[in-house]
Length: 325
Ligand code: TXA
Ligand code: MG
Image (cartoon, rainbow, N blue to C red; front, side):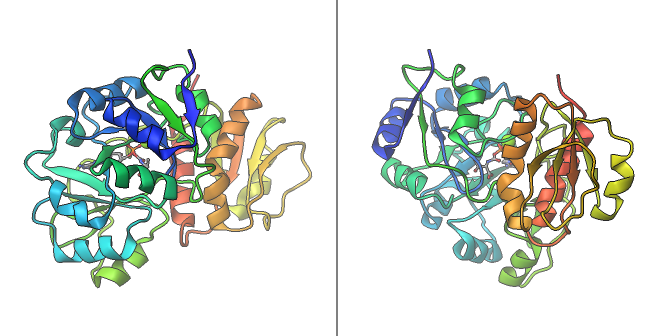
């Protein structure tokens, strides 16, 4: 049986209180949420995604005031960053409070926390009143969903139709996963690029952002990930003509609308006007490539500025994962 889709935050809260899972919208991508204090619900999140148990999940909070229920010894700079950015596409990895479940942290001494900026999900969190564990609502290793259609294609038949729900909040406006900042000591560390840039973090905190992870794992950010079935080839705009002379048609193409494209038979998957629109359409374009049965997608990298940095990161990961079957 296929899981039900609802538009009502109240129905989602009831499902969560009953120990069910809810795929819900955030400003970045859809998440698969469950009560972060309920070991059975967290275990079902992992089982539903087919995700290794050692991968920690982000806890979504109703507001920055909930930080101290989940974290301890939060550095003042991280508190300022949370206050300046939440609700918004930023996750902080902070020292965990004692009672946070090991299943949520992957057994690590830290926990990932964020307040998502989506009105419907903020309503759910406000009514639920505590943390919701939520990884992206895709099967392990697949591209994150940015629409209800993608969620249904990934999990519609896997979720439990009598307990779980999908909350329809339209298309996710950012389109790539949150920026992850390590915040367990004096140094902000960029663990995953997203719409909140390292420059913005430096500006708010008055600290230099380290691009090294400080030895802490953010599992899932290093392994083959974000991969469509199609083989992804990434290229800088000025090398596009060279690559296209070697690619066999038909292939899919994603590039900024300003990039000059040689006259070769291809399927244009997306022509975003800028980096923000590139992030917004990226995963839908990769899904569309798979739906069209394309074997190859050529993706022209946007300039490495603003959210363009995160788009380049996700494309390069998709490219290095190779084609999945
Ligand atoms: O935008 C997002 O962050 C979305 C939405 C749904 O909020 N969520 C998301 O979750 O992308 P997920 O599980 O697909 O990716 C979370 C990443 C993983 O790579 C995980 O390893 C890392 O965050 N992470 C979570 N808690 C961590 C911790 N305590 N230490 C290190 N890395 C952590
Ligand atoms: Mg994910």
